[in-house]
Figure 1 (cartoon, rainbow, N blue to C red):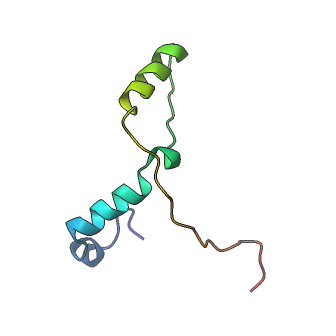
Figure 2 (spheres, rainbow, N blue to C red):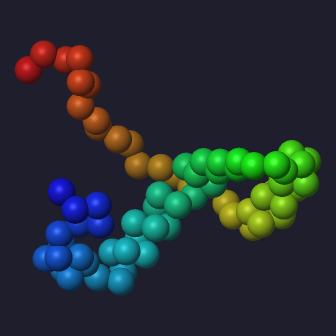
Length: 72
């Protein structure tokens, strides 16, 4: 499977579909931030808080993922 998806899928997706996906899943309560390197923790945390201060948590849809240990 291509990482970005198959060409027909990409071409068949509307701008509205992409925005709906983005606004559903790219919310603060569904984001992880990873910082590596020689940084000062307090400085980085304050910059992240400032950058995300206007972001509001969103209601995440329920996921129905398969249980890999479950017998079929």
